[in-house]
Length: 55
Image (cartoon, rainbow, N blue to C red; front, side, top):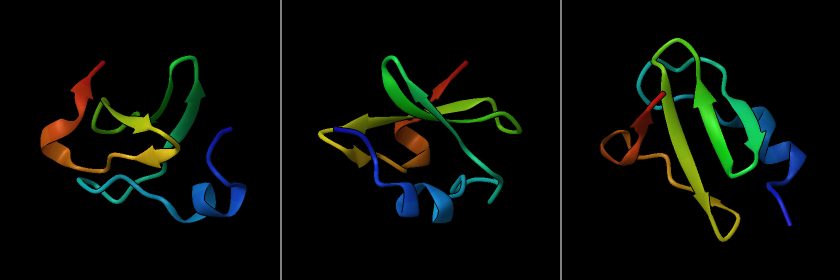
């Protein structure tokens, strides 16, 4: 199962408030402006800046 489409529409990067790209393998949300990846665990996005990984 993946994130609900209506949830994806409202999520933004917590650091810059910019749009996020939904990636599927592994499931994650990517912010191109900040160059950060936010993990998705058990269909829950982990939107903590300290937990994000650079790409």
